[in-house]
Image 1 (cartoon, rainbow, N blue to C red):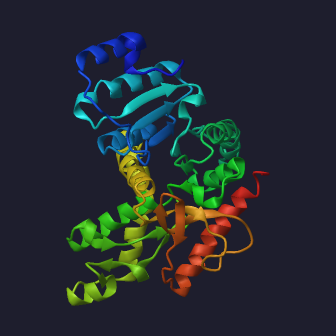
Image 2 (cartoon, rainbow, N blue to C red; image 1 turned 30 degrees about the vertical axis):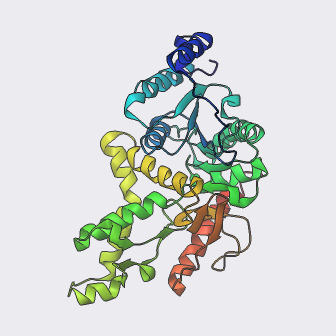
Image 3 (cartoon, one colour; image 1 turned 180 degrees about the vertical axis):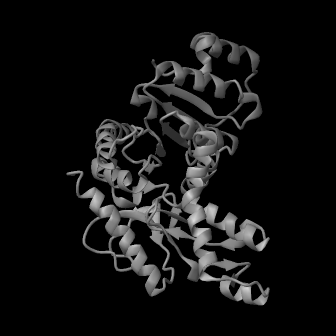
Length: 351
């Protein structure tokens, strides 16, 4: 399927003629300011996750142009038309789609959600090898058509595939980011807020490390309304035990599995999570998010190039820096264990 837009229904020439006859030109005009940016986002993969991301990007008005890519031509066409038909209710965004990657040309941000699904009984390594083959097709084409873009990987296992994308792209590490534990941290903030009966927006809390079972909850740096959480609990005379805190962390790691068990897949939360990252990057907000970045050299992580989630400042240049968050000795040890877990998997990929 070639790239399409709603103008295809009228024909390009007819659409132009109608526009010229509908509007009467004004006199003594000047061209637009050369400093105006045209923001373009491409989403590769139009499954549940990809479309939730696309829909959130549209409703939040984050791009002037949105390109969709998928191998399934009919589904892709249908998704594009479905979004285009909502144009009257959305900020103005040009929506295009194609099975060919030239539709992504000159993107500011390329979001990859495509990935092979695990077959029952299949090993994690075999799944990774199939995703490596898929990424070997996707990433070079995105780089070819958008050599100055930022790559954001959402496909799972996100940390390893972010490393794969970095290696395949040849991009500097600041322009390759994984969605990482940004959503995990949001779940963490919600559960803490629910436990304490406060607004989640007043809770500052991070999950770092692997987006998975070896993730690390940074209890020592959590604050509620600017007050460290342990002091907050004492002030409110709320009894707590370490087991209670660990139970909340376990609930974070199990949340996705619970959503999948109940509805078959996750989508809306990851859509909001990725849109928040896109906004931070493209609007140069310089806000801090726990995303998967090249972590070697931070918190004693050595011995190999590994991507895992750390609180990173995001802006137009991608990853601008990593926040120097204080970790206890136990938290730092757990983070290094998380890095070792990912490195062991990466070592079997052969790239």
